[in-house]
Image (cartoon, rainbow over all chains, first blue to last red):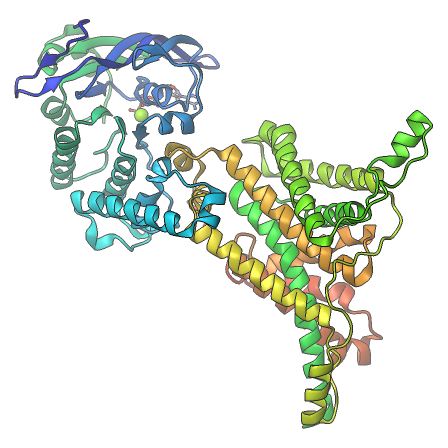
Length: 271
Length: 329
Ligand SMILES: Nc1ncnc2c1ncn2[C@@H]1O[C@H](COP(=O)(O)OP(=O)(O)OP(=O)(O)O)[C@@H](O)[C@H]1O
Ligand SMILES: [Mg+2]
């Protein structure tokens, strides 16, 4: 799989070269080793899942990719070059959007306003030009507003556009968070347990959205998920983590039959 | 109309005008508190520093002249020019932006994720540092500030009220101008936060830091921005207070009057700061007029605001407009 050409999936989607590569990443919190010497890559256009038992280090890995955590060892390669230490907001500006396991929305804002913040990376006007060139700023606002509305339609949340996020149930909040991430028109989308706490119907909706995003916009997606059925359905390739180590990497079928993976999942109490 | 009522009206109007100033200082507090959770004890001293700098620039004073003269044995005090008010205000705004950058770069940046009390202590340190810096840069004598704002009794109101009530109200022109400027300032700030990209980013940071980072907002930039805005608000407050009673070190004490305003209005609400300021301004004047002077022997303005705030704290701790504080269990 090390070729730059990519591969073609069973359902005929073309997967491109490597966009993001983790090389020997080690991340420690004091005495706790959250990630132990892990390497893997993410290819253009694929849906890459990260799975593993609780506390395996999955979220930590996503946080390393998005710049929230800085690993003590190892390199993150982005678009074929090692990435210097970056702040999370710089990562966002490079076209990498994310959602959080515990949902981080702007609770005091409406759904539409939340989605509009996702457009911030795409806005070019600055303080001065906005004051001097009011027309241009307004045109930009209108254009961004249109894109935000499109994404809201796409995720079927039109009816709550003007609702303050704090009033929404958990499942819808997850969806709004996805909408905000999509508003940035990311090249790479990182989703930390997008379906956690959802009922079956909500999970089906979310799965469909994730597939559609990948399909229609060609967005590369890395996602963490506990529900094995969902993972097997959605993902092209899977990384399996346990106690900070990588214990498996491959297609869903390869991973499912991997003995280490089976042991990890049977040996550890799991929700 | 009974005479007492007419007097009370005049007192109320004057109280409103005083309240505008409290509101402005409180507004500076709110801007920083909302975006960073920092209670900026130095807001009052920033007003002093801004006013001192403005006077210094207008008069062509050489900054740090005492220090320079003592070190090099020179005897320079003035550049020998005068800077027009408007240009001086622009330059001072630049200085306040520079100050904001320094505060963020050299102090606050290193204290991210510290407990609120630590941040508060840092701003106390900043307050005394700024007070010393003002002294060192511009000297400690009381200075006159005149940027060309009209002053003195408003004849028109005097005559109009005389015709209606048979008693002419004394309303200072400066107070009227101050009110108009403060209103404009608040409206522009609101528009800024609602309709500009940076304003949206500012609201985002006020709401959730992590989420703000994830949509590409630099917290550092926003913090410099809010300290700059607070610095500008301090400049406006400094100009008004300085024009009224001269630029002197007691100016930094208006920060203390902003405290009860914040308790009333809530620490996170811009409209709250305005309404709170006006209530305190009117309240303390009316109380002094109706109860303080006749029954307490006067000077109740010194403590009335705090007592009012205390009563408020007991019954509505989040203030008039502040977000409800609900403990999660
Ligand atoms: N900010 C932090 N400070 C200290 N320790 C942390 C921090 N973040 C994660 N850890 C530790 O790192 C380890 C991995 O945590 P992580 O959240 O990455 O696991 P996870 O695989 O996402 O688990 P879950 O399925 O429960 O979300 C855990 O032991 C956790 O306690
Ligand atoms: Mg996790």
